[in-house]
Length: 207
Image (cartoon, rainbow, N blue to C red):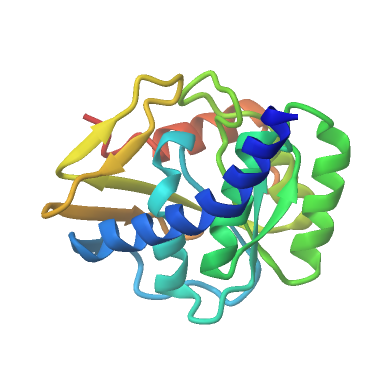
């Protein structure tokens, strides 16, 4: 019973507090966008590594002044916390992952793209291995005929957690560097070639 109460309180309070902290960290840093000036208004898959997703909503809002996106979030307790947090940034969620219940999640994602939503995805989520691209993003893009934008988020000052994804939290008073590719088309590509292209694109600014 006590555990249920604690989980309820966590779900009630932590997302709101988390959203405030994310906004504070963003506003306490300078920002540099090394990104294309414009992107297509067609539905796009925005991809970044799991360890860099904290500040992803601001890259998205750089291109879409009115949010119309859903983020693929695994359906466990931590995922629920993330889901409720990103709602404060106008983003919806798709519950599941491309490694568990993969077929159902891919069908949902393809339908969502065809309905006109952008999708946010971490190709190495939800549990890794770190910086290894799963096939889900490729199948999703090919079946929905959607382009992919690869995003790297590199703060000059950061805390890095000792988690499987080496999760990055920007420290105040630095610079958050946003890198994004132009739209990538993987239609017609073999899985291995597309996987290598995405992995290399997401590691261009890795030190």
